[in-house]
Length: 136
Picture 1 (cartoon, one colour):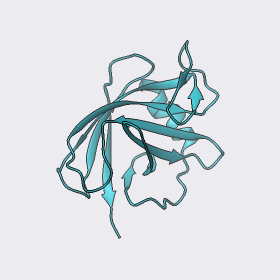
Picture 2 (cartoon, helix red, strand yellow):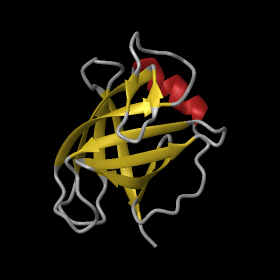
Picture 3 (cartoon, rainbow, N blue to C red):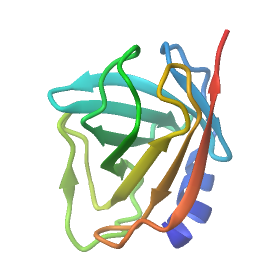
Picture 4 (cartoon, rainbow, N blue to C red):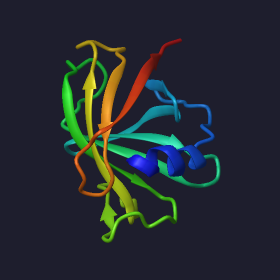
């Protein structure tokens, strides 16, 4: 996510308060577990300007299931058009600003911090992002 992580996400993110059961604090704002889909979960960052960044985490199960390593992809609804092709998520989110993600939880139990590597388009994930679990 070279320039994406530093420019687009930073410009997009003015994180709104999260209401999901699982929320993590990152340098980019709060990421919340938005919903599940057949085969994974969607994590979301609200931009505060009607734009979203969603992380589609393949194979992860709802709270309570053991955690480990997961791969997936991210899609931003920004108008940047970073990639030459459009990508659509299982929830219908579509954009030409997307990339791959590789996420690893620190602990096997909820709540857990995580570390993710992200990349742009089909590029190898290499930018580090950390999530610190927020608990009430």
